[in-house]
Image (tube, rainbow, N blue to C red; front, top):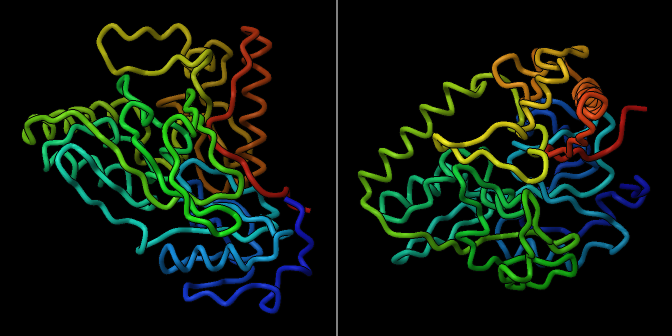
Length: 316
């Protein structure tokens, strides 16, 4: 992102009802707890506030929508842009029959639990870190189900401030990817799941949580899976799940489980979890990830693709 800092100032920005914070450190807003400042952090009060702000924002100023920071490395030099972070006005959850409308800031786990209580099976969301906005953007999934399987529509505010509704076809879901509008901000999504007995759905989620805690470093400082599984292979969580092309397997085969760079480590418990073991910089984390990619390619000719999003500039 290449906004000249001089064009982002209190004088050049619209005056929203929400909160504008200049030179805002983003480290504590990400799960990995690294990264430099945003030129500006904007927390809109509601959809109309977001529309008005984007409509009146000078077009040469870039924006970056940021979720809860669960799948993100902000580089140490920070971001030359207006970072938009949705909060309390965007985390509502409404349920009507088998249809769930969730705000972009609603946590995936909360949506799964609320839906299950109403007998709607969105249980696969229970163990996915982050919020609904990011889940749509990444076509998040596990246990053989993806957002694409339950997605009906979503509302976006465009960079020009218009409120539009997009369908599954518009977003063209792929493995860990969707065609989000450039500069647009997702504000809510409509999901539709099969019906089930609330007690059975709750029991299933409890079992999923137990399995996750047994196999993933949930108490460590990570950002979830670091790399996509090669060739789109994904964990189904089923007994006959095959592991020959899982990211953790090719990382292990390259001898990179437990590899370290500064305060960054490829987790000993699950080697596809890049971890801030204490005092890591964004450069440590990204540098270790790139070293893993090189070693895996040298060992197996497989090119791992980052699942964690990396944004911003390195430290000068």
